[in-house]
Amino acid sequence: MTATPDERFERARAAFLAGLQALQAGHDADAEAAFEQSLALMPGRPSTLMNLGVARLHQGRAEAALQALDAAVAADAGLADAWGHRGVALAALARHADALASFERAVASGAAPDTVAMHRLLALGNLRRYDEALQVADELLSRHPGDAEAWLQHGRTLHCLGRARDAVESYRHAVTLAPALAEGWSLYGQLLKELGRREDAAFAFEQALAQGAEPELHRWFLAAVRGDEAPPQPPASYVERLFDAYADDFDEHLQQRLHYRTPQVLAEMVTAAAAGRAGGRPFAAALDLGCGTGLVAPLLAPLAQALDGVDLSAAMLAKARALGLYRELVHGDITAHLQATAHRYQLVVAADVFVYLGPLDAVFAGVRRVLQPGGLFAFSVEATPEPRPVLRDSLRYAHGEAYLRDLAAAHGLHWQAQRSGTLREDQGQPIEGLCVLLAAPAQAA
Image (cartoon, rainbow, N blue to C red; front, side):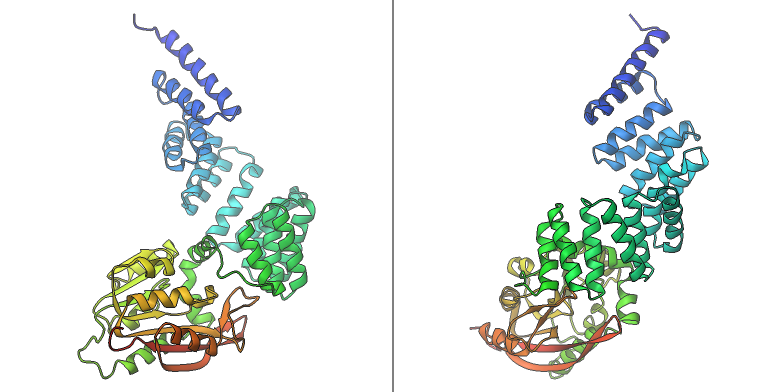
């Protein structure tokens, strides 16, 4: 027997209420199922669609949540809470401009400004609209001066605006108000390190560790500021996050603000060494280690018939891919790639890559594995007189010439040429480095 409209409504209502109860209890999958059951009985109800979106958001399924929330605001454009949740879904999908517009629509639809203020602040920061973000943070703190998270984002915004000393005070407020705020201690420590306050930075990193911050990363930070024995490399997840965030501004920042010339110097050294080789493109295949956005590619492409690259950052690789100069781009760790790839190369280049690695034995072994007889290996390092790799408080490793010469000899690579000089600037100071060209023996062992 077919249910009457009233019966369908009551069953839909019961399922909706069961979904709310499950949502409040944290049983998000059960809530989703209940809301879907309710919608099957009474399609298109805005409040049910909104709560379905929330249940999906809680499960980390932003794309599916967005579908429900889009339907909710299409059914009722005045549903302020749905606009707010929709903004959260869009932010999770890194659609920050759309997220900001959705949060602003929530306020226009009657949501209390404070309910979305932090979301607006984060969206503006992700869009690099730091002046506007600071205004939102100031307004939020004027109403809630005891909000530790607001002080944290206030500090982050000031730091991005270049107001480091003001940012220190904001971070200090954040960790004073919430001593268990691990992220606050971490950001506070990183800024103190940047300002040269090594002991204060070490204390902040110790507090971050005590509050549950990522152990591997913060022990690496501590090694940099205290001079402890350094880990062999930073956590791969840290490097990937760093460069994913840096990808959009990477080329401009390096070349215009830091006066970065390493790719040009390495290309000049390789070109000079290849002058006696036959053909317009003397290298059949070249490998760009830690290729980033592909800064080296325009300089290597005229020398190589095929150019491959490998990098930890997916966002950087997307920029490199857009150049159209690479045959193959691999998302992964360079050492693991060198050990696994089936390709062989006549040229391997690593520009400003070894600053993120301490001991280089595994990399040199991998390069020797993929380098064909007579092939060239060109790379740069930050220079140190120390006999072993050194982790600096800049969080970059430096390597000495004697160490590199011993390493080259151990792996059967001949020292062909070197150039010393300024690689780039850091906070206005020149960073001295070494560009090196090695060669594999002309005959395979």
